[in-house]
Every structure is written in structure tokens, then in C-alpha cells.
Image (cartoon, rainbow, N blue to C red; front, side):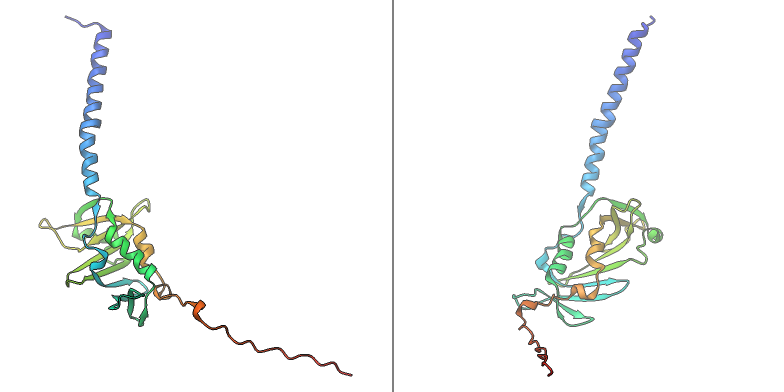
Length: 207
């Protein structure tokens, strides 16, 4: 029996709608859930667990250590100079390390590290915890649209020879690419005594 043209069109529309619902609502929900699961925290330690940090960039290698005293500053610069660190700057980086998340994870052959600039990273952050455990974060170049940085956390090769490349916030680059002067604790000029000004000589009238 030959179906009327209108009925055939309605059947095709119904099949098309069913396919759309399946791929968008059912399969799409699964894919979205997988992406959501991939957006996970980079590290699992807390800020108070960290004992020391080493930040290595193209221009500077900075060693920071938690102050043994409870008073400010909380962090001390151990090298390349010795002195109190800028707690606000260190706390900004610490917040990223503790709360930062990877937008997604890419599994790629280890030989392709150069494509992400992870063979010669723009920055390396070494973290030592109070329990002597250590972690490392490598920061590579920006992705194609500049929204994220390619990164590696505790870089190790998987059994299949691939490595995990993360996409992390560009805030990490802002946090570490600083001059040494920015890492130092600011001088509180309000505690200084005002300098004595030398009075100008009073001109004498010549007769």
C-alpha cells in the first residue's frame, strides 16, 4: 500500500525529531556530563599543608618558605634574596594552586610535548608539603583562543606512553611572571619618621 505524501512527510519529520532528541538530549547529556567530570581540581592539598614553593620562570628562580612564626608575614623569600615576602602575592598564587581546576584533560603522546611548549615551560612551580610530599605544575603556552594555558600536573607518563595535558586558567601565568620587587613585602612608609627638612637661607636685604 502506498502511503500518501503527507503521511510520509510526517513520518520522516517524526523520525528526524526522534533522532534529534536522542542525540541532543540523551547522547548530548552524556557528553556534557563527561566534560563536566573532566573539569576537576588540579591538586587536592590545602593551603595550610604547603611548607615551601619554588617558582621558576624565564627570568627568575624564587624560593619561598612558610614563616615559622605565626605573625606576619606568613611567607619568607629564601633566595635569590632573603627577606619577608608579599603575602598578598603569594596568597594569590596559593589560591590558584589549591582551588584551580582543569577545564579539560587531553591525552597526548609524550613526544608531542613541544606542541604545548611543555618541553620548555614558561614556568615551573614546585610545591613541598609539610608531610614531605612534593608536587609540580608546568605551565606551557596559551591555547588557540588564548583563554587557557596548557599545563602538566605531577608529570608522569601513563602505561600507554601518553601524558595528560591540562587546560588551566591564564591567571597562573599572571601569578608567577613577576619581577622580584613584586614578591618582596612592600615597605610601610607610614611607620617611618618624617625626614627633617633643611630650611632655606633667608635672603638678606643689601643696602
